[in-house]
Length: 307
Length: 307
Image (cartoon, rainbow over all chains, first blue to last red; front, side):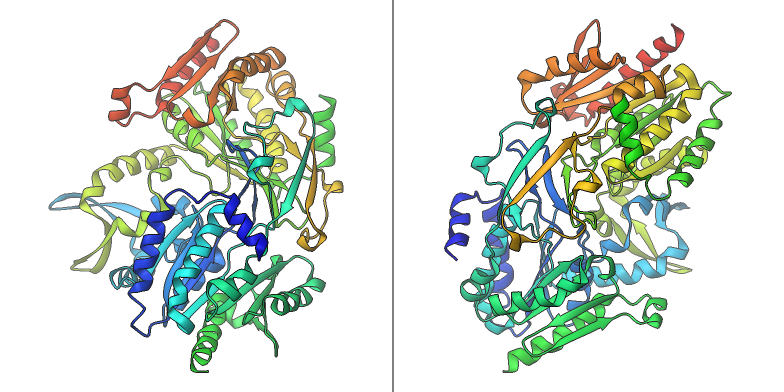
């Protein structure tokens, strides 16, 4: 945990950090006297810059599907603090692919002139989405905070966790963001764009301190904490998830394989290994695996709060 | 150029490559007997995978602003083949940030039931955009093709260039994509996700062969070719642009600095160094620098075709 503390000392807070912190404090303060639980969902990938004036960075596959879909299902019971990568998918708007936006609108003429309306065949689905979106917005049940780099993400994760500790067991952390394991410290990266005229490129990346230990033990110690483990090799998945659980002593690890993550995941706890899968008829009915994941988690969190 | 040929031999064609090629051939064939020039715009950044089953990759800052904005201005005279990064900005839809989408719609009731329409205050601007978008679509003046990785991009660039060579001087290549200079060949990368339990990470990246030479001399030798040079160090910009022009013998390099690229660029040709800048009143009037860049290029291409 000394490494985690050193990391925060040596890295700069993100732009707008204090404004974001104030917003998070206000959002959580509203819940301190109520009984609505709050879930912090982290979503999307983090970037690791290779240069001070950053042209290039290391990134990962995540566009925020898991986190943004999960948020929609958590609202049955939880309010949501959504800490997400800039330009990644967001709850509700994720159903509208940007490239098709102009194709769903049509020009209508009425007494007041020209109007732009959603085409009839798309209206029912979008009305449903917009009603849910507006109700969540109106009731103040969502706060969205953005990050881009690994460093920004970790500063915001620590701040959010510390603030949420006031919620006790009503705090739920759902750590779905795909966080880099490696980075280049600022004092070891070149200031300007790396030149290809210098020939092939050797990069030395250091390990990012494991923050989960500090999070579970110090930042938000009463919370229900779920982390994710993504692998490409199925042989490693469960053993890696178990190791993580033993090391950090949190409640649950959700394991998933890159190629099958939209159809099956495995819940690993101290006492069980439980696969959650989409069946053939789920797929036909457009069921998302996040609905099953979150349904189970909401019940687990309810039980945790009663213990 | 032997290195370029070797690169294509050793890398796989992207998914849907033949379908994309057929689409491009059809789009270009329509122009072979006409006199409408065609511009190939490349836009957005390329990814460089670090693993075979790719969890991590190297990427860059570009989200396709330059390319997508430029396309809109090229339509005054050129038809557009838009070769762009998956999920990067696209012409016209770029004006609708996805995160604000649900906020610009409102529910209206009429005789036929509930409708979803764009709010009044947003209608005029969006009507203008949608009219332009629909006319470009209807007249078949746009073909969009997507890429993600460096390898996909280069295969599609070569195919497009070879097909466009039938247009002679009416072919215009506007190479705005931010293409990686480094990559890891498939046979030198691990198959599975790199494990952080193995400690710090050393990466060895090789140089990507410079494709501009093959493009200018072999693939599409009669075309008007504009490349971009992006730097973070202003002291390097013009000398790097001049070196590129001398080496590849194409028509023009547009130089730009990361921090100021939305406000000023420099045109470097064999005979001149010409800055294009947004003035104070341009900024106040919402003028985009791409309108000035493309206006000048359209005139330069017209003159080039008359020579």
